[in-house]
Length: 332
Image (cartoon, rainbow, N blue to C red; front, side, top):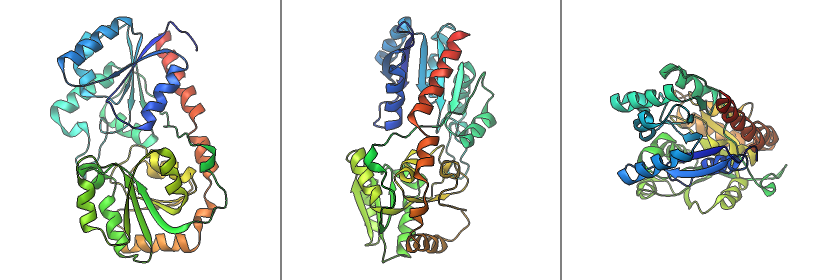
């Protein structure tokens, strides 16, 4: 631990997202970390303001309006580091997805991004969105990290004619992440198995199941080991998202040896690098089906460089970069 006297408050909305938990654990290795899951209640605000009395740095996942409303009550001596990684700086015109499309929310988001001592976009794509919205005092692109156990990397593993995607079942998220597109593609590939894996949060899974062809299987997300086992069975990872600021699940799939088929105009091509194929939104879904079947028939997943993805998005790299930024803002 660098300095046990450095007190950091890790702020995020309560959720099971692994990448947030990972950041919290990495920061706890170097600083004295307290956690705060924000809610829109007076009691929650009062607890946070009391916690600030013994805080040197607030590390916030997303530029959320909750924290923006409290900016006037945060002394300048307390440093703020914001991870900008999604809706906060998103500029998805097609779905009107992003705080900038809401007058008040956009205004609050800009207030926080300007007050922050450092803003950390999670990809170059995400960074361009940030800079099109506001010019922060300091910003640095820091990729998300993926941490996978050793059993998840099996070079030369032969896989089934199976296409998988992983993501929460939720009305907007399922549309944004291309679940409905997957169902349409499955119609063109009746002899191939498709899998959508995730937790259902609002009944959207039942909606998808009602219109899905018989070759689509819906699998509950239990834990990360279970997810990895499903990825190791699959030759192609399909994610034709309308919007992605990074795409952790795509990085994890490539790291497990899946051949990625992803959408252009998002951060996904940046995550994939030289792996897989990028599909333009103008390409007919029947042609996408042909690309996928060809990739499986040729076993192109055997050519995936899983190691390069693991190195680019390593835990050590992310820890080093976020710790460097925290130390930098503390030194000013």
